[in-house]
Image (tube, rainbow, N blue to C red; front, side, top):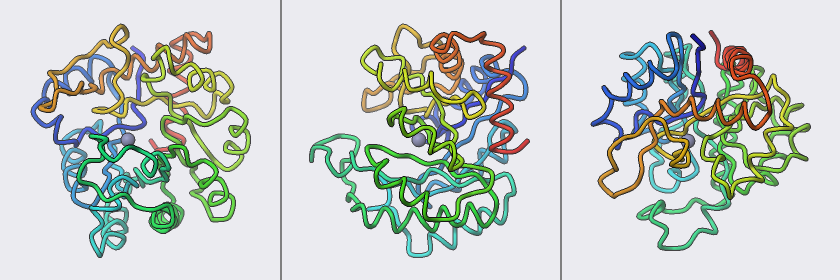
Length: 283
Ligand SMILES: [Zn+2]
């Protein structure tokens, strides 16, 4: 059976806690024996939950980071020391999710995804991003980067600063195809999200035709970014706030969607993505 890897999700998210047993079963059926997922903490308060999952489930690879959305409200004074301690303690741990986000600064005041959060300015985001990139470089771990409408901010930073020798992941990359060659040169991998299969996301989808095969990965970003209803193979009950919860088992949707988009054989693509996953995140 083919082995599938989810390069980016948030299995530790509290909304998934009541469904963990069901998710583990669905994951095994979808990803096969040996399939791994990189579970990304987004602020110091959730790193322990990520670590606990990694100790319990052999398929979980832990990642620790401070995300631009959480930076405004969840930044403990000693966060950077705690991040370094996490990396030093676990050689499988990578850095993520970190990044830059201009959408955050432009979103409506009543956007439910940002309720109660203080929005960190771009200066503040850069100030948190750079030391995390530096830690990934120092410990020779990959970094997982969230970049939303901020490629013009990110590119100069990547050019000017040391980057992880293993490379970095631009998760759910939604930038232009023209930027791909330089990003590849800088060490980028790109993970395809099944949410790009939404008909209206044609632009994001088509970019993945021009990404070199040796830099492709697949992700779910679960519980966020569910695939379109018609594609969804794994379902969960709705979240308490009525939103759809994405099941990591939907990783098979990302692989199937990407293979059909590129006109490639699904098994061959899965084999290549597995090689890429191991090269970036380690065996
Ligand atoms: Zn994410």
